[in-house]
Length: 77
Image (cartoon, rainbow, N blue to C red; front, side, top):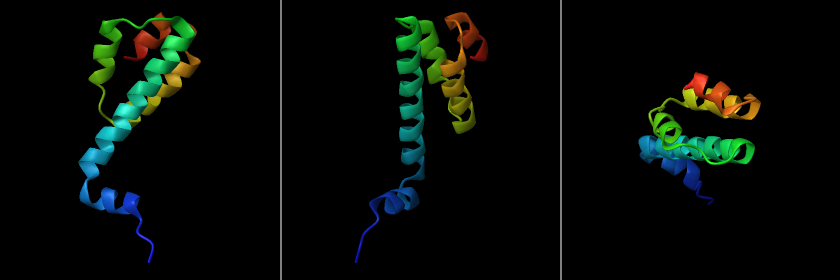
């Protein structure tokens, strides 16, 4: 019998799983911004932390990739 731990976690801990996914997306956004633009201000980090929806974070990931400047990205926040 094969135990699918991911499925168990999804059923038992949906909030925890969603929180971890959100943290991962935030980290991805920060990494992209740091590679493209250098250090990221605490203001941007704080605003990024306030985004909690999966849809909002997905927009920010795509925005971080496509933004030409850090100012362009800030408009998404």
